[in-house]
Image (cartoon, rainbow, N blue to C red; front, top):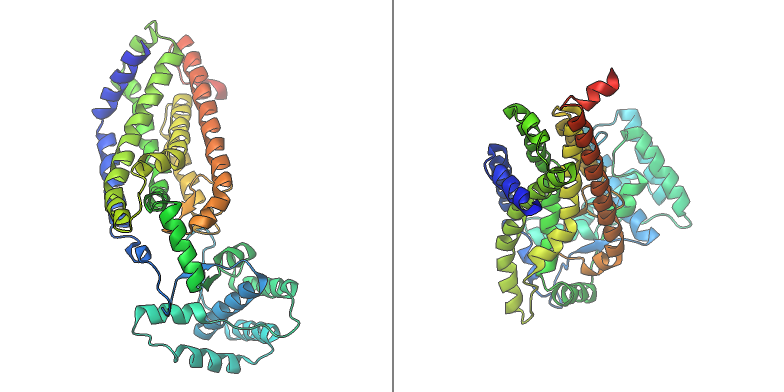
Length: 412
């Protein structure tokens, strides 16, 4: 009976206009974002290059020097980018506030702001700013040394003062500068990273992580519309009483419905991943390595399936509970909040709904964080299972009460 119900539910989803809107939006978003992404990183580094890319700084001194370099440029332009509620807000300091920022820089570096300006100008004039590679190398190489004896604790206090001047959501908050300062890679580091990209990831797994980074953004919201539409369809068609009278249990009805929606939502994701992966699979062969042909299945199933599961489960639960589209607003708020709450675009998984890895590479860094990612995905699989069980209980209660809204009954 379960198989028959499952196939019937799949056909119901396939007849839904909302489902095809989901497919079109997802495919268009992914193809626009992933077109030609990261090809420059697939070239083996050669000795003597002026620029080998960047890697996240982990030592205190590079973090301080890189953050102060950013601060000198922001103070010079008197333009600070902040994201107080996840959205961009440009901040311009008053004359007195700008003077305070300059004094903070002088305290950190032991140099006047005029001297720092001259050194900055001299540094960037050494590079050909017309060349993209030279411009990137200039930005990566620019550092502002701290004065002798200046401690990391003093630096943190100074950045707190800057945050009070420019407001919340700036790159001078501790979580931001400790995850957002990059230092230039040496040839040896670039070669080691390239070898890991080829041998550990076979290129295709690295590309699929980048695919999942972009896909995770839209999949935090889009499946909610498919789920809500399916749950409300019986009510709109006025066939609830007919379904309630069927001998099938609530577990069979909700279980088959949920699984069918999950499979139908996942199919376009896997198909798109397969098609976008192919150029990278063939590129791997030109390097003489065997790319993982099944990466399009392995990585999205680990990375994206738990996210789809919890989004869909929440859609079922809230819609069965309220008989409204409340789940759309709840999930949209959660998705947007999760997107803008990330301290970095690479890692920092925690228990975030949207897990980011906006980089084609950093294979060794990912290996060190893989356990954290698995814990994140395991948590959401478990939470999705709990939501589905609660949906079955809510559905059973409504069935006994003839289809009346449980939420309204609880309020009355």
